[in-house]
Image 1 (cartoon, rainbow, N blue to C red):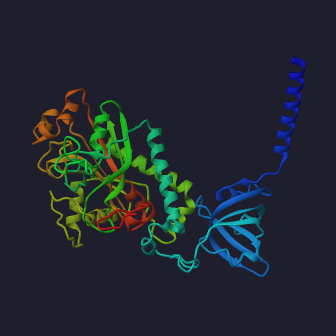
Image 2 (image 1 turned 90 degrees about the vertical axis):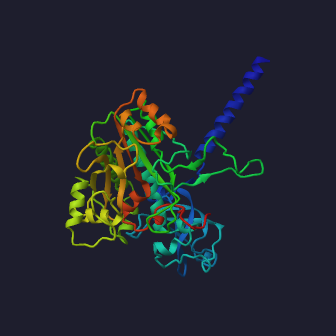
Image 3 (image 1 turned 135 degrees about the vertical axis):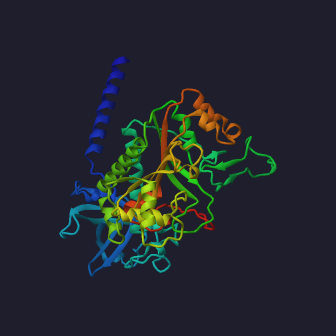
Length: 468
């Protein structure tokens, strides 16, 4: 019995090995992304690609068309029989199987000689809002938020945005920061401007006169105060997520929902501890994007002025106000000491310094929120606050040292009732610390030269806009 079982097992093992060998030797089709196919490492192989048709060029005996799957800007040329001319259209989704070969043309390294083409999704080129031989403006494609990812410009933007996100996370990880997921729903108005979206439950089980939470709740305008909590246990923390402002504006500068990069640094000694992190993050992230998305960035730089440099200058607000007051340019807003800088002032200062990023520090104390550290200087009386101004955008980053002195915080009216927990942070092991926030969409505007903030976010939300 044992011998028979052993023989059966031996035969079964031999058959299994034979099947494995035959399966291994069989020529199989390998699925490739377009970016992988263009590398040319699979020349002569039987491959399969999937994507969307970007151009169609029929000839007498052959049909040439390009397919793109979003993995890179460049498309892969497909060579097929001319019998598919009426079926294949611009914008349609296809799956193509064939042999990857070296292209005889210098403009493209490889091409796919099609053996089988499957049209997965048809596209009527007459009704499709984007036309095959037209270069559409950002203003035009903005009308089609559900389709604009099909264009070269916006697909490049989305790849750049993804890579910039990776770069920012990599910078913080490399420098020992801990990522904190700060809440979206909060009771705090961190900016103090009152431009909040209130959150209320809906449905028959809820009384509209009662709060779902113990207090009124709003969508977050900033994760800063929650980061300050965490800065009592970590030397460096950051968050990267959506924030919301109920600004009744449809201008090219405003969004109701946008992304913020916010960081908090403990054991600070001066405002330079913050400006160093700002500059290093800006420089590191931009170098990463330029290195990993060169083709996509170059596409943008063919149509817009880049306005990007990485050198920085450091100046205080007294210097800035002096420059503005000596200017012959007429400003719509006043430039007196004690008045906040407006976008027109910020852009002028950047231009005055040679169109490079500029730090402005030491703002009037009364203009800043309760948490900004008092410099206790005179006669101006300033706060240890800093803004990073960049070409084409104005303010990119805003931050300050935080007031760690409990007695000075207590002097601010209303904190004992509303922010008693915040005062507790100063009672138990408080350290000097500071932080800043960077508007991610503004950062993309800066490195790409894009004028309208609605063109650097996948689904822009603003006053009276339609929501998908």
